[in-house]
Length: 93
Image (cartoon, rainbow, N blue to C red; front, side, top):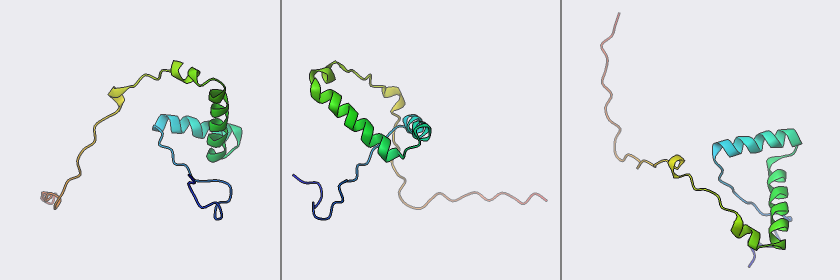
């Protein structure tokens, strides 16, 4: 199964990542130190990770990442309709 049309592809396909802000800052700091673009660092890190995991897939089962539900936050439903009227303040002169 192909992600893109091989005739139109130039060898790479887009990949979108969602990161927490603190991890994004760590990644940006590392990119500045390495003097490499973010896409290069992410591609190289994924390649190295897959090379290591493909040698021993059972090692992935040993990795346990604690789920921090406290930082997950709650989303608020968007308000529908007109915005509430603002109360006008008397001019203080």
